[in-house]
Figure 1: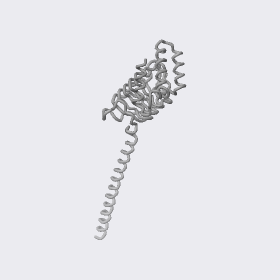
Figure 2: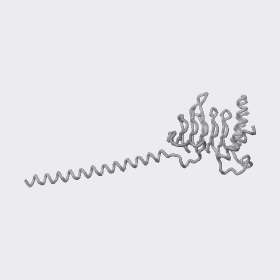
Figure 3: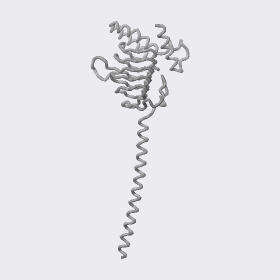
Figure 4: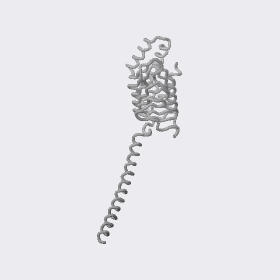
Length: 231
């Protein structure tokens, strides 16, 4: 138990430059509190003490603002930065060394029984406000941009952004184990607008060329009619 707590604390120091001391992490980090509560609730849930497990998860939600269903399976090294508004569903599975920012939802898309929440691989970063909805798998070393809505499986070593989520990088660049530089994520909407602007400029240029050719043809036609009239 203590070795696992030590790993959770080390994960916070590795990924949050604001962490100053072990005492600060123990007292002031809702991520650590929520995960410790979940470990207890999950152990009770597996032993079919469902009501007690849910009660513990609700207490944790009240204290931390992070809602983790006791049925969720969470690996080692999970870091939930700030954490307010994070929701992790019952059948969600999270691998090792995953980073989740505030407002993230790992949810379902229906009322069916069985597996209905996503499976998240190792070394995944999920940006603020992102929604991952459905019983599919997000591979290892994936980055999901802030505000994205992911509704389909994502292969390993990809970057996903947008609504709905679209893969914008796939094995095209080196993926660090944990990359927190959201400012360097591609912007497919801006890229599309830039392409449209370029196409419009090209069309305007071609239109001016066609208009110039038409004017030249009119002038030639007018000279031809005048010469015919003189004859």
